[in-house]
Image 1 (cartoon, rainbow, N blue to C red):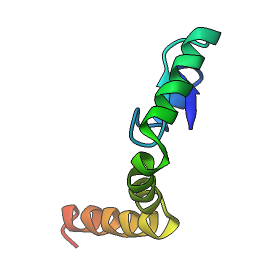
Image 2 (cartoon, rainbow, N blue to C red):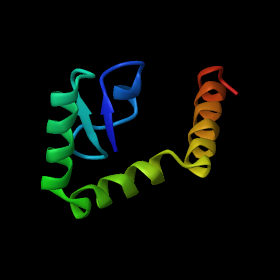
Image 3 (cartoon, one colour):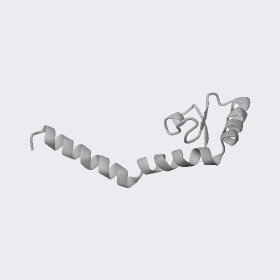
Image 4 (cartoon, rainbow, N blue to C red):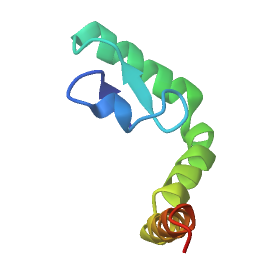
Length: 78
């Protein structure tokens, strides 16, 4: 994935791990980002994307929510 640093996209892309962040939405900057993306190659991004997918799954979210609820209950002395 190649994203520009506008509109919050930077919050969802880990530069050079899950994609490439381009600092400016300008043709030369985007072209440079595309070149960086292909220079690194798909194999570079695959393990990082898998880890991001696992960390962002619904089951992981549910686990974190249950853990949070347990922590809240424990802090209330229940």
